[in-house]
Amino acid sequence: MQTIQTRPELRQKLSAWRGAGERIAVVPTMGNLHDGHISLVRIAKSHADRVVVTLFVNPTQFGRGEDFATYPRTPEQDAAKLRAAGIDLLFAPDVATVYPFGIDAATRVSVPGLTDSLCGTGRPGHFDGVTSAIMRFFALLQPDLAVFGQKDYQQQLVIRRMVDDLGLPVEIVVGPVVREPGGLAMSSRNAFLNSKEGEIAARLYETLRGTASEIAAGNRDFGKLAASGMETLTEARQAPEYFEIRRAADLALPRSNCTELVVLAATRVGTVRLIDNVLVAAQ
Image (cartoon, rainbow, N blue to C red):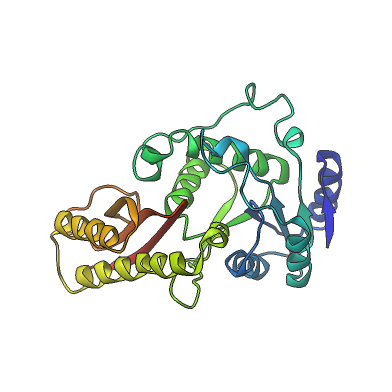
Protein backbone atom coordinates (compact mmCIF):
# COMPACT_ATOMS: atom_id res chain seq x y z
CA MET A 1 0.00 0.00 0.00
CA GLN A 2 1.27 3.44 -0.93
CA THR A 3 0.21 6.63 0.86
CA ILE A 4 -0.10 9.82 -1.19
CA GLN A 5 -1.00 13.31 -0.04
CA THR A 6 -0.60 15.58 -3.06
CA ARG A 7 -2.43 16.06 -6.35
CA PRO A 8 0.62 15.57 -8.65
CA GLU A 9 1.56 12.27 -6.99
CA LEU A 10 -2.03 11.11 -7.28
CA ARG A 11 -2.29 11.98 -10.97
CA GLN A 12 0.95 10.15 -11.74
CA LYS A 13 -0.14 6.99 -9.95
CA LEU A 14 -3.63 6.88 -11.43
CA SER A 15 -2.35 7.62 -14.93
CA ALA A 16 -0.20 4.47 -14.84
CA TRP A 17 -3.18 2.35 -13.78
CA ARG A 18 -5.45 3.79 -16.44
CA GLY A 19 -2.75 3.30 -19.05
CA ALA A 20 -2.75 -0.38 -18.13
CA GLY A 21 -6.53 -0.53 -18.56
CA GLU A 22 -7.17 -1.22 -14.89
CA ARG A 23 -10.53 -0.55 -13.23
CA ILE A 24 -10.29 1.82 -10.24
CA ALA A 25 -12.57 1.92 -7.19
CA VAL A 26 -12.61 4.51 -4.41
CA VAL A 27 -13.90 4.20 -0.85
CA PRO A 28 -14.24 7.72 0.62
CA THR A 29 -13.82 7.84 4.43
CA MET A 30 -13.17 10.30 7.24
CA GLY A 31 -10.90 7.81 8.98
CA ASN A 32 -11.17 6.22 12.44
CA LEU A 33 -11.88 3.06 10.50
CA HIS A 34 -13.90 0.12 11.81
CA ASP A 35 -15.16 -3.18 10.37
CA GLY A 36 -17.92 -1.35 8.49
CA HIS A 37 -15.34 0.58 6.49
CA ILE A 38 -13.30 -2.55 5.84
CA SER A 39 -16.42 -4.30 4.52
CA LEU A 40 -16.69 -1.53 1.91
CA VAL A 41 -13.05 -2.09 0.98
CA ARG A 42 -13.80 -5.77 0.39
CA ILE A 43 -16.71 -4.84 -1.87
CA ALA A 44 -14.47 -2.44 -3.79
CA LYS A 45 -11.83 -5.14 -4.25
CA SER A 46 -14.47 -7.46 -5.72
CA HIS A 47 -15.44 -4.85 -8.33
CA ALA A 48 -12.11 -3.37 -9.40
CA ASP A 49 -8.45 -4.03 -10.15
CA ARG A 50 -7.24 -1.17 -7.96
CA VAL A 51 -8.71 0.22 -4.73
CA VAL A 52 -8.10 3.72 -3.41
CA VAL A 53 -9.28 4.77 0.05
CA THR A 54 -9.49 8.46 0.85
CA LEU A 55 -8.96 9.64 4.40
CA PHE A 56 -10.13 13.21 4.93
CA VAL A 57 -12.13 14.77 7.76
CA ASN A 58 -14.07 17.23 5.63
CA PRO A 59 -14.63 20.53 7.48
CA THR A 60 -17.38 21.76 5.15
CA GLN A 61 -19.86 19.07 6.21
CA PHE A 62 -19.71 20.03 9.89
CA GLY A 63 -22.00 22.80 11.10
CA ARG A 64 -21.39 25.35 13.80
CA GLY A 65 -21.25 23.64 17.19
CA GLU A 66 -20.76 20.17 15.68
CA ASP A 67 -17.86 17.85 16.49
CA PHE A 68 -15.29 18.66 13.79
CA ALA A 69 -12.57 19.49 16.32
CA THR A 70 -13.20 16.36 18.37
CA TYR A 71 -13.99 13.93 15.56
CA PRO A 72 -11.77 10.90 16.22
CA ARG A 73 -8.60 10.89 14.13
CA THR A 74 -6.47 7.72 14.11
CA PRO A 75 -4.33 7.88 10.95
CA GLU A 76 -1.67 5.35 11.99
CA GLN A 77 -4.22 2.73 13.04
CA ASP A 78 -6.22 3.41 9.88
CA ALA A 79 -3.18 2.88 7.68
CA ALA A 80 -2.43 -0.43 9.40
CA LYS A 81 -5.99 -1.68 8.87
CA LEU A 82 -5.98 -0.67 5.21
CA ARG A 83 -2.60 -2.28 4.62
CA ALA A 84 -3.94 -5.51 6.11
CA ALA A 85 -7.04 -5.22 3.91
CA GLY A 86 -4.83 -5.09 0.83
CA ILE A 87 -5.72 -1.74 -0.70
CA ASP A 88 -3.46 -0.24 -3.34
CA LEU A 89 -3.45 3.41 -2.39
CA LEU A 90 -4.34 5.60 0.58
CA PHE A 91 -4.99 9.21 -0.41
CA ALA A 92 -4.75 11.34 2.74
CA PRO A 93 -4.71 14.99 1.68
CA ASP A 94 -4.76 18.03 3.93
CA VAL A 95 -7.39 20.76 3.72
CA ALA A 96 -5.25 22.94 1.43
CA THR A 97 -4.93 20.10 -1.08
CA VAL A 98 -8.67 19.50 -1.22
CA TYR A 99 -9.61 23.21 -1.10
CA PRO A 100 -6.65 25.01 -2.72
CA PHE A 101 -8.38 28.41 -2.77
CA GLY A 102 -9.63 28.11 0.78
CA ILE A 103 -12.96 26.92 2.11
CA ASP A 104 -14.74 30.26 1.78
CA ALA A 105 -13.80 30.55 -1.92
CA ALA A 106 -14.39 26.88 -2.73
CA THR A 107 -16.71 25.81 -5.53
CA ARG A 108 -19.83 24.20 -4.07
CA VAL A 109 -22.10 21.45 -5.40
CA SER A 110 -25.65 21.36 -4.12
CA VAL A 111 -28.35 18.72 -4.64
CA PRO A 112 -31.75 20.28 -3.87
CA GLY A 113 -34.80 18.26 -2.95
CA LEU A 114 -33.21 15.17 -1.47
CA THR A 115 -31.28 17.31 1.03
CA ASP A 116 -34.25 19.30 2.33
CA SER A 117 -35.55 16.81 4.89
CA LEU A 118 -34.42 14.30 7.54
CA CYS A 119 -30.72 14.96 8.27
CA GLY A 120 -30.87 17.97 5.98
CA THR A 121 -33.33 19.66 8.33
CA GLY A 122 -31.29 19.18 11.48
CA ARG A 123 -27.93 19.80 9.79
CA PRO A 124 -28.38 22.67 7.31
CA GLY A 125 -25.55 22.80 4.77
CA HIS A 126 -24.26 19.36 5.74
CA PHE A 127 -25.04 17.66 2.44
CA ASP A 128 -23.66 20.57 0.41
CA GLY A 129 -20.39 19.96 2.23
CA VAL A 130 -20.57 16.23 1.50
CA THR A 131 -21.34 16.56 -2.21
CA SER A 132 -18.78 19.32 -2.70
CA ALA A 133 -16.03 17.15 -1.19
CA ILE A 134 -17.09 13.94 -2.95
CA MET A 135 -17.25 15.79 -6.28
CA ARG A 136 -13.68 16.95 -5.70
CA PHE A 137 -12.51 13.41 -5.03
CA PHE A 138 -14.33 12.17 -8.12
CA ALA A 139 -12.62 14.88 -10.18
CA LEU A 140 -9.19 14.11 -8.74
CA LEU A 141 -9.44 10.31 -8.92
CA GLN A 142 -11.82 9.82 -11.87
CA PRO A 143 -12.76 6.39 -10.50
CA ASP A 144 -14.82 3.80 -12.32
CA LEU A 145 -16.83 3.14 -9.16
CA ALA A 146 -17.25 4.36 -5.60
CA VAL A 147 -18.47 2.41 -2.59
CA PHE A 148 -20.59 3.90 0.20
CA GLY A 149 -22.38 2.42 3.20
CA GLN A 150 -26.12 1.97 3.64
CA LYS A 151 -25.94 3.39 7.17
CA ASP A 152 -25.73 6.85 5.61
CA TYR A 153 -28.82 6.12 3.53
CA GLN A 154 -29.77 9.67 2.66
CA GLN A 155 -26.17 10.50 1.80
CA GLN A 156 -25.80 7.68 -0.72
CA LEU A 157 -29.06 8.72 -2.42
CA VAL A 158 -27.84 12.32 -2.63
CA ILE A 159 -24.55 11.19 -4.18
CA ARG A 160 -26.38 8.95 -6.66
CA ARG A 161 -28.53 11.93 -7.69
CA MET A 162 -25.46 14.14 -8.12
CA VAL A 163 -23.77 11.52 -10.29
CA ASP A 164 -26.86 10.99 -12.44
CA ASP A 165 -27.61 14.71 -12.76
CA LEU A 166 -24.07 15.63 -13.79
CA GLY A 167 -23.58 12.57 -16.00
CA LEU A 168 -20.50 11.41 -14.12
CA PRO A 169 -19.12 8.05 -15.33
CA VAL A 170 -18.95 6.66 -11.79
CA GLU A 171 -20.83 3.56 -10.70
CA ILE A 172 -22.16 3.87 -7.15
CA VAL A 173 -22.15 0.66 -5.09
CA VAL A 174 -23.73 0.52 -1.63
CA GLY A 175 -22.64 -1.92 1.06
CA PRO A 176 -24.96 -3.17 3.83
CA VAL A 177 -24.92 -1.87 7.39
CA VAL A 178 -22.38 -3.64 9.59
CA ARG A 179 -23.50 -3.91 13.20
CA GLU A 180 -22.02 -4.47 16.62
CA PRO A 181 -23.14 -7.60 18.52
CA GLY A 182 -26.03 -5.72 20.17
CA GLY A 183 -27.30 -4.43 16.82
CA LEU A 184 -25.93 -0.88 16.94
CA ALA A 185 -24.72 0.23 13.52
CA MET A 186 -20.95 0.62 13.51
CA SER A 187 -19.91 4.27 13.54
CA SER A 188 -16.77 6.20 14.40
CA ARG A 189 -18.81 8.14 16.94
CA ASN A 190 -19.72 4.98 18.89
CA ALA A 191 -16.38 5.32 20.67
CA PHE A 192 -17.84 8.26 22.59
CA LEU A 193 -20.58 6.09 24.15
CA ASN A 194 -19.96 4.66 27.60
CA SER A 195 -21.19 1.15 28.39
CA LYS A 196 -24.60 2.31 29.68
CA GLU A 197 -25.10 4.62 26.73
CA GLY A 198 -24.20 1.75 24.42
CA GLU A 199 -27.05 -0.29 25.85
CA ILE A 200 -29.43 2.62 25.38
CA ALA A 201 -28.20 3.21 21.82
CA ALA A 202 -28.89 -0.42 20.89
CA ARG A 203 -32.61 0.31 21.25
CA LEU A 204 -32.41 2.33 18.03
CA TYR A 205 -31.97 -0.71 15.78
CA GLU A 206 -34.46 -2.69 17.83
CA THR A 207 -37.09 0.00 17.28
CA LEU A 208 -36.35 0.34 13.56
CA ARG A 209 -36.54 -3.40 13.10
CA GLY A 210 -39.81 -3.62 15.02
CA THR A 211 -41.38 -0.94 12.84
CA ALA A 212 -40.14 -2.66 9.68
CA SER A 213 -41.74 -5.91 10.88
CA GLU A 214 -45.06 -4.12 11.39
CA ILE A 215 -44.94 -2.75 7.85
CA ALA A 216 -43.97 -6.12 6.39
CA ALA A 217 -46.96 -7.66 8.19
CA GLY A 218 -49.31 -5.23 6.47
CA ASN A 219 -49.56 -2.17 8.76
CA ARG A 220 -49.97 0.88 6.50
CA ASP A 221 -50.58 3.55 9.13
CA PHE A 222 -47.18 5.10 8.50
CA GLY A 223 -47.87 8.23 10.51
CA LYS A 224 -48.88 6.28 13.59
CA LEU A 225 -45.91 3.92 13.23
CA ALA A 226 -43.49 6.85 12.98
CA ALA A 227 -45.00 8.55 16.02
CA SER A 228 -44.76 5.30 17.96
CA GLY A 229 -41.09 5.00 17.01
CA MET A 230 -40.37 8.50 18.32
CA GLU A 231 -42.17 7.66 21.55
CA THR A 232 -40.29 4.38 22.00
CA LEU A 233 -36.90 6.05 21.55
CA THR A 234 -37.82 8.80 23.97
CA GLU A 235 -38.91 6.25 26.56
CA ALA A 236 -35.56 4.51 26.04
CA ARG A 237 -33.87 7.74 27.21
CA GLN A 238 -32.78 8.79 23.76
CA ALA A 239 -33.40 12.20 22.20
CA PRO A 240 -34.74 11.41 18.71
CA GLU A 241 -34.51 14.06 15.99
CA TYR A 242 -36.72 12.13 13.60
CA PHE A 243 -38.18 8.69 13.03
CA GLU A 244 -39.60 8.40 9.52
CA ILE A 245 -40.93 5.92 6.98
CA ARG A 246 -40.08 6.94 3.43
CA ARG A 247 -40.05 5.58 -0.08
CA ALA A 248 -36.71 3.85 -0.51
CA ALA A 249 -36.00 5.16 -4.01
CA ASP A 250 -36.23 8.87 -3.30
CA LEU A 251 -37.24 9.47 0.35
CA ALA A 252 -40.65 10.76 -0.71
CA LEU A 253 -43.55 10.32 1.69
CA PRO A 254 -45.01 6.91 0.88
CA ARG A 255 -48.49 6.17 -0.32
CA SER A 256 -50.36 3.20 1.05
CA ASN A 257 -49.51 1.10 -2.02
CA CYS A 258 -45.73 1.66 -1.86
CA THR A 259 -43.78 -1.58 -1.52
CA GLU A 260 -40.11 -0.58 -1.29
CA LEU A 261 -39.68 1.44 1.89
CA VAL A 262 -37.01 2.50 4.34
CA VAL A 263 -37.42 3.27 8.03
CA LEU A 264 -34.90 5.91 9.10
CA ALA A 265 -34.04 7.62 12.35
CA ALA A 266 -31.59 10.08 13.84
CA THR A 267 -31.22 10.33 17.60
CA ARG A 268 -28.89 11.44 20.34
CA VAL A 269 -27.64 9.35 23.22
CA GLY A 270 -25.78 11.60 25.59
CA THR A 271 -23.74 13.87 23.37
CA VAL A 272 -23.50 11.37 20.50
CA ARG A 273 -25.63 11.71 17.38
CA LEU A 274 -26.53 8.38 15.77
CA ILE A 275 -28.30 7.50 12.53
CA ASP A 276 -29.60 4.17 11.28
CA ASN A 277 -32.12 2.68 8.88
CA VAL A 278 -33.80 -0.58 7.88
CA LEU A 279 -35.08 -1.42 4.41
CA VAL A 280 -38.44 -3.15 4.19
CA ALA A 281 -40.35 -4.75 1.34
CA ALA A 282 -44.03 -4.18 2.13
CA GLN A 283 -46.74 -6.57 1.00
